[in-house]
Image (cartoon, rainbow, N blue to C red):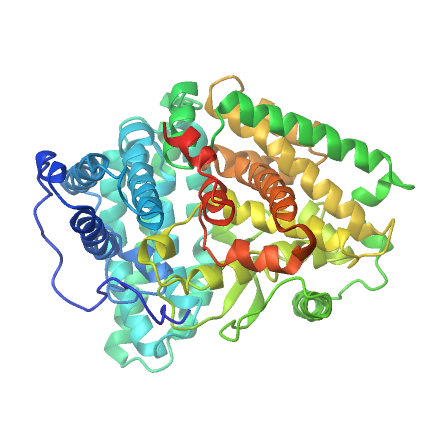
Length: 580
């Protein structure tokens, strides 16, 4: 993705590791500051924080399109973990101490957002402690460190191969450190990490070797040696985890108090766990009933046999996906439903690497990173099998457009591409999953209700089923992480209430367990967006135009809907409720 053309972009030059001292808390200094000075101090803290974060998490940086530290892995030594946690905590205390009542509205919004960003990191450090409990931290570091070098041709194959070699060499030590760090590993997370570690071979043996084109003989030998050592270490890591499985706790919920804290202080939701679950139950009941009201309720269960054409192979399957995106773009333009900016890049469909299958059974969207110079986005889909029972494969064979609308245009790819171009750096950096997923899910039904799909079509049925199982996700997420359900209960709920096959249900439950609150994002975000749409329409009166609402909504980036309500309607009540 092209860098934001204006605003306070963080310094991403290649310089020595930032070693600034952790900021000292001095709350008195904020009492006598003018509003202008305090605002400047806030943005100075943010402008210092993002480069610090980028350099301390080099794999995350590579994934976001910043390739300054492609030869490094994150340092997970206990001392470094503690140092990073203290830095964030001290910075958060400084931000909390700011007196913002006299600040202009836009600057107060930036303060609220930056505080939420820090709350998110601090919550992980204080409550989740994944470095100690989640073995996936270390397998994902290995997988993403290589995948982030392969997904785009941002540099020559040789330079990317050399970066890969450097990272591969560090993996054995990283995994050994990970085993030492895992003082209270969770069995479910360990099982997922084992699957991922034992599925990484194609990524390193096949995908990575595509970069082995211009290496000198000694560089080639180093790459092969480092790759083989990394693979041995990953399989050894899986073996060691397997030996420890019987000693691990099955699952450890964060508890309702922590769950509510996250909803309020990170997601800025004016809801608690009970309110979130209530919305999930209501939406689940609605979409199950809407399925039943179809002339043929079987339309909600994708069936490739109903498709006019079944792709013969993976390549044909991918091409069929991409061709349907063009239809959707034409429909959006013809009906003036959203403005597509000139800087929007291509959106491509690719096969999902095996290492990501345990927690992403339906694939995942990889948008342009916040630092990307290349505006291309990707949707990684599961390996094609026309006989598959997987919900996502069956749905994509019959009609890929509902999923494409979610992942591509007008969904994630469009929305996140626009977010990357914001001039306000705090807002450009904000990643509110409730808004991101809510917008994409809203787009699925919006396209249906504006006429893209024929009545009583498989596409309409699929959209109802997609919303139904997203509603089921809420019950799983809330009950799993507040400790009311175990993992098998979560899987069964996805099957019984969500209408998923067991393979998809197990993957969904695994994803919910691994990413607390992520699964509530879809329906809660859609519900908030629909509520905002109605209020926006009433406010605009005769001047209301749906396409203008969409443009006004997504031009603000990936911000919480409570904040967007303040921006669009000048109504701060939801933000005040979330932050009081």
